Length: 117
Image (cartoon, rainbow, N blue to C red):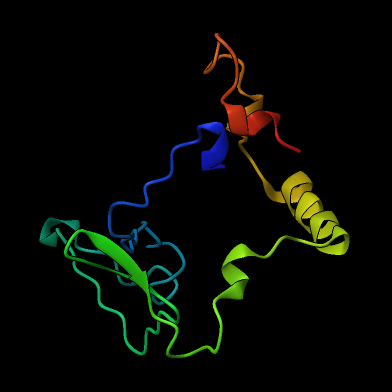
């Protein structure tokens, strides 16, 4: 929606972030083994992670690698009516926050993308 003034961070590389949460009461042998939080910061690694069709940042420009696919047409696809219905169901039943409904956050009016259907 850049055409209506919605900014998109396309001039910076994308990153993958993870979080840790305290699951001492269920994920550590039923709570028998406690996490030693004094050992923080913790690091994580990923094995067999495959970012198909990743866009790569190089010399101030982004380029998408289509080596794994014959086309990048999926980048500009729209949802059909059946998939829009599915998306709306997920939003209705699972979304806990929608900034386009947060009038306190935007007392001067909602961002332009909130007016799009």
